[in-house]
Length: 78
Image (cartoon, rainbow, N blue to C red; front, side, top):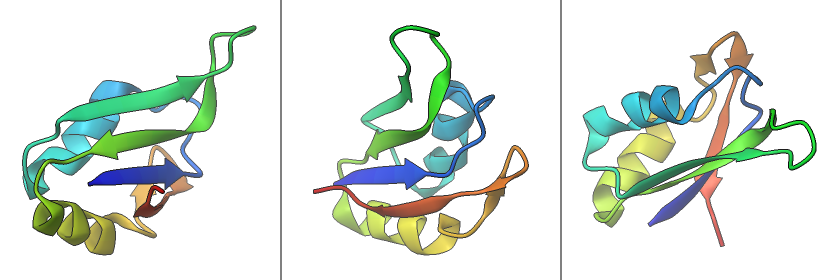
C-alpha cells in the first residue's frame, strides 16, 4: 500500500521518514519529493509498505504526529 505523507519539514530526509515507518513493518520504498531547481524538499513524500495491515496501522498512528517540528498528515495515496 502506498501512503502520502504531507506537511513535512523541509529538513526531513528519506532516512528520517523510513525510520518513522519501519516500526510498523517493512518499508518497500521511501521517497521525499524534491524541487528540481533548488534540490530542497517540497514538504511531502511517499512510503510504500507491502502489507496493507502494516500500512493502515502506520497511517492511523502517525497521522497528526510531530516530525522535525511539523505535524505530518498521512493518508492513502491514490
